[in-house]
View 1: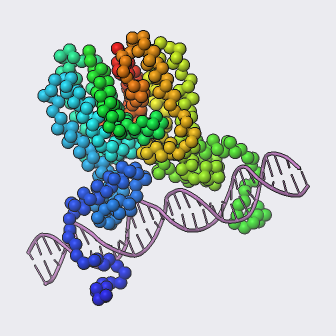
View 2: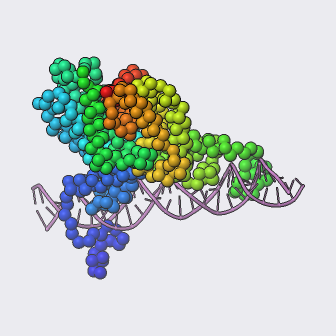
Length: 221
Length: 221
DNA sequence: TGTTAATTGTACCATCTAGTTCATTTGGTC
DNA sequence: GACCAAATGAACTAGATGGTACAATTAACA
C-alpha cells in the first residue's frame, strides 16, 4: 500500500483518524480496572486484561495512572466517594430514633447486597492490610461521618427513653456493618459449606429482616 | 576444589549426607505455605518464596503437592479440619441453653480473634468464589455439624421458654459468625477509616461482650 | 549385597507480566 | 499554517514465575 510507504518502517502507524477524549478514556479505564480488580484482586489482576476490556490501550493506563497500584488506588477512591455520596443522602435527623435506625440498617444491608463489587474490593484491600487506603489523601479525610450520624440518632433515642444508654456509636456501626457485610463477603463459602445461597431473594429478605431486628434489639431499653 | 571433580559436571551434586523425613518435609512445606498464602493470597503468593521459607526445596513442593493450587488446597483442608476439631470439643449439650449459647458465641469470637490466619484464608478463598472448597473432597463432607449444635441448643431454649420461637438455626450461626468475623477480616480498613484498632485488648474485650450480648438479645423471648 | 522404588538437589526453561521506547497524531494558539 | 504540548498506537524488554529435566541419594527388602 502507498500508505505504509509514507511512514517509518515498523513503528507507530495508525489506522486513519481518531478523536481525543481524555476524560472518556479515563472513565473507560477505571470501569475496566474495577471489573478486573473485583474479579481477581490486586495481585491476580492483569494489566493486559484490563487493557483488553478497554476501548483503548495499555499505554493509556500507564499514561493516566502511572502504574498498576496507582490505577488500583484510583478505583478505590472512586468507590469510597460513591458510597459517601449515598450516605450523605440519608436524612436520618428528621426521623424518630427507631425509624432512623431501621432505615440506616436497612440501607446498609441493601447497599452491600446490591454492590458485591464494593464488598469484594474492601476484602481485597483488607487482604493488603489497607495500605492503599492509608496512602490515599482523598480517602483519609472522608469517613467519620457515618459514626457521627449514628451517634446523633442513638443519643436522641436514649434521651427519649427508647434506647438503653452506655453503647458506643462505633459498636453500633460495627454491628450493622458486620451483619450487612458478612453474608456478601462470605457468600461463596457459606454456599459451599451449608448449601445455602445467601444471594437468593427469599434468603435476602429473611436475612435483612433478621439483621434489622438484631440491631434494634441490641439498642432497645 | 577436589570435591567438585568427584562429581559429574554441572548436575545434582549434594553436600555430603542427609536423612529422609517425608512427613516432616510435608509439614514443613505446609507451614511455610500457610504463612505465604495468608500474607499474600493465592495469586500473590510466590512458590519460590514458600520454598525459601522451607528447610527443603521447590522441587519438593511439586513432588508432594503437584502444583501451586494443590498446595493451597492442602493448606485449606488442614485448616478446616483443625477448626472442626475444636468445634467438636465443645460440649454444649450438657449446659443450660443460655450458658451454652454464651459459650458458643464466646468461643467463636475468641477463635476468630486468636486465629486471624484462619480469617484471612477464608477471605482469600471467598475472593476466589470458594472454588477450592468446592473441589476438595475432604471438606465437602465436613461442616454441617455447627448448625446442628446450634439447633439443639436453640430448641432446648425454646422449650424452656427462654428463647423466642421461629428463628432459623442458620440465622443464629450467621449472626454469631458475622460478629466474630467482621472485626478481624476488616480490621485494617476499620483502623484506617475510624482510627480504631480492633486488635487492641480493651477493644477486643468490649467487642466480645457486645457480640455475646447481641446474640442473646436476638434470641431471648 | 544387589535391586528397586521413594525422595531429593541443581540447573534450567517457556511463558507471562509490569512497565517502556519511540514515533505519531491531535487540538489549540499565534 | 506553523508550532507545541497533550494524547495515543504498536512493538519491545527485562525480570519474575510456575513448573520441569535429569541425575543422584536413600531406605527397604529379597
